[in-house]
Image 1 (cartoon, one colour):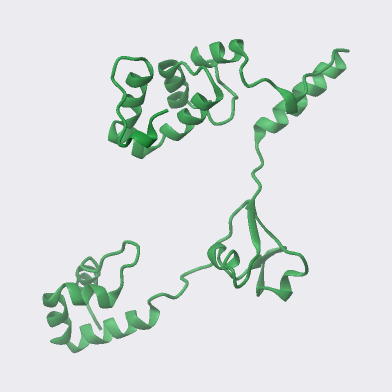
Image 2: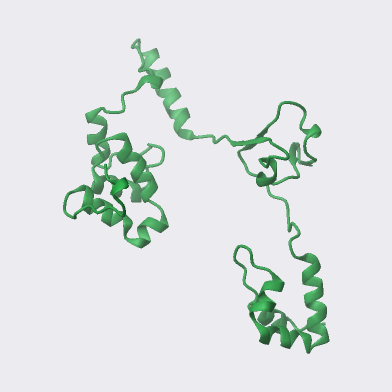
Length: 217
């Protein structure tokens, strides 16, 4: 039996990033290998860990994931039941692999869509013709003025306080600007200074440079 503090100490020496493995850790750390080889209890622990390595720890299910097939799923993949729902035993990557060739899609239930549907219903009840949501203009100045003022409560993707502040700073003028805003509001761009750089360059306060001439507009 290996004391828990020893297990914890040894485990912390094993990398847990993508592609990490026990054998890789032992090859890159000769002192760790030497310590394990010198202790029968440690060797037994590592032998057990090797047998467990790579095995699926537990099944997971995407709340909105739907697998699309041209026939019964049982002809393509093994299934198991979770409550009243049938779920594939293959992960997303395996499902979409060329050997299986199924399509996995995520269908999200958005409260925003319900709000739009109810708004259209209320307009119709009032005797007026509702707008065609399939043909809304993407260049409506009043819409961009509203968004530039941060008036976006209830607007999907930009209703959070951080996004509304970003709208006020960037002053979107086109649909491309909105796409950029949703891409910038992530830890990577925010922590790297990319978001502030974009704002300064869009406002003309900082010169725009290109890594290669082919990137220039």
